[in-house]
Each structure stands twice: as structure tokens, then as C-alpha cells.
Image 1 (cartoon, rainbow, N blue to C red):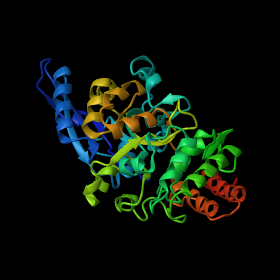
Image 2: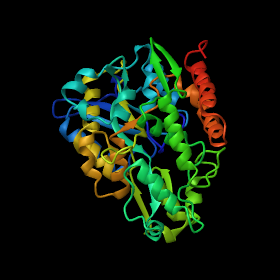
Image 3: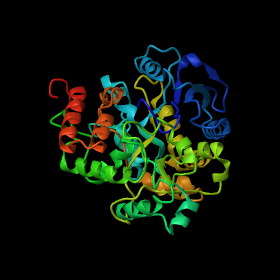
Length: 419
């Protein structure tokens, strides 16, 4: 996807004869080249993984290379088509990018390993679903991140809100109480379409839906309109601009100004808030985006990474071994603790339970989703019609009419000629 919740990484492993061989306990050691994008994993984590992997695979050696995110798409496409020298065998990609790379049969189908060895039934849906194509698994979930509610503990206490809300109704009631004494109960920009997506999914709606092999925009369905209506009610309890998104102005700066009780953001944004206003260091708390009932947190957009294996790998078994190690419980939980990510499986959430922000993120990730699983979705985001649709509704336009027009725009991008 064009914009990520985090600065994510693209990792790959390459097993090519061009890398040469090294002496090993069995006579030779094949080199596996692994690309990782900057800031995906710490150098200490990569060093520890390399040492452990090589000690348990005495016929393989890892060559881990850090890549830049900018321009990685064409570089991955070149590697998949066999045009890149010393190309990779395992590639980390954004979860929503798998759809564009699976075209033309250039990825290895990993369904059998997923079903047999990798406990796919426990994977986070927001990572697993984008990795599928026609029920085949090509992208293997690695780690995730998503939005939570960051709040001011002191302002909650002052307003008499003793516990973080767990339902939408409680959230609205608490936010209304917080919206006093010159404070905003919540700062929610009018075009935060990622947050809107979660509300739409909670209502049973979709941004777009495929039927008969054709994708169509669905913002004008009753379920999607209910999600937009909840967004409108929540957004009205603060002074977020109707015509801008959460980056204009950056909401970390708005929150740091001291008059905002809540924002919806990745928990990592707390560090930027504290840098701008150190007095808030001990006042920030986190809770999952509330759902319709207390038993289930709200749905959230899940960003993160999947691992893919190009079909042009020289050694499928070795590539699979790298994927298995990186996504297995040992190293996946190590990465989550090291980088404050959510592990790839719901049953590993306890690994981050001692970090309040990450624990809140993990609770939401269990019900996370991703954007529509089509390679054409990037064209929708390039000139995103959801944003002006939201602004129109928040400015008083008829929701049904605005949603119908936005849905037509989405359909034009996903199925030209049908919009």
C-alpha cells in the first residue's frame, strides 16, 4: 500500500549458485541472501536470528541486506521476473501488496505448509487474508500494527471517566463528558478513512466487494452508511477539521498541545507526543478501539508484513526454512517484543501483554482487516474518493448521495467501464 502505519520492511532470502559455497559440516554451505528494509527489525535481532538459523542449518548461510522502502516495488517486480542479479528467495512485503505480486504466477504457493506446519488457523486475519489468492496462500503473516485509542489519564480522571470504554455507546458517552473545560473529548480528523473502515466493517459493510469476478464500490450500502454515521457522531465531539486527514496537521502535535483527551492512532505515536510535550510522559494510556459489544473490540485496519517466496528460487526447501523460522513462535515473538509489533498469531498475544500500548494493539488486531484484496486498490488510494466523501457527509451533505458517488469512483478504478 502507498502509506503504511509504520515504516515497514521488505525482506528476502536468496539461494543462488552465484553466491557460491562455503565449507560446512556436510562439505558445503549455500548462501541465502535476505533483504530486509530499513527499520523492520533491529540489527541486534537480525544478528541473533542469523546466528541461530545458521547453527541449526549447517548447510546454509544467511547474507542479510538492508533495503530502502522508496522504490522497492519495481525492485521486487524485477526480482520476481528474474531480471535482478542475485535475486531473493524470500521477500518481506506489505500485507496489502501481495495481490500485485501474485500476478502472472510468479509466487510460490505455500498453502500446504500453511495448513500442515504453520497453524494458519491462528493467523491474524488482517495479514492472512491479503496473502491469499483464489484460496491459495502466497503471503505468510509475519508481524502487524494497527490503531488504538491513545488517551490522557489525567483528563479522564478529571472528567470522572474511571475506566476506558469498551463499547461504542460507552465511548460516545465518555467522549461527551471529556468534551468540557476547554478540552476536546477526541481529536478525529474528518478524512481518517482507515478509522472509518473499521466502523464500516463492524457494521458488516465493505469498502468494495467482488461479485462474479468484478469489484464494485460499496460505500452506499446500509451497513457502510451506518459505519459512516457512527464516525460522524464521534467526530462531532471534537474539533477535528472536516476537510483534512490525520496528517494535516499531524495529530501528534495537536494532541501534545494539551487540550485533547483522545486520538485514534498507532501506539508508537505516543513517542512523538512525548517528544513535543514531555510533561505528558506519565499521563498517556491506551485501549483498543471499542466495538459494538464489550465482548469484542472494534475492527481495525491492520498494517504489517507478509513473507513471499518467488517461484524462481533456486532452492524452495531452503526458502521455506527461512520463512518457517522467521514466522515461527520463537522468532516472531522475539521480533514483536523487540520492535513493539503484534505477533502474527492470535495465540501469541500474551507475548506483548506487559506493554500497554502493544497489548491494546494486539486485542484489536485479532479483529483486524485489510483493504480490498485486489492489485487495483492502489489506484483507488492514489486519488482516494473516500476522503472527500467523508468531508461531504461531515459538512451536511446527504450521506446516501455522497456515498453513491464515491462508490462509483471506486468502481471506475477497480472495474473500468462499470462505474
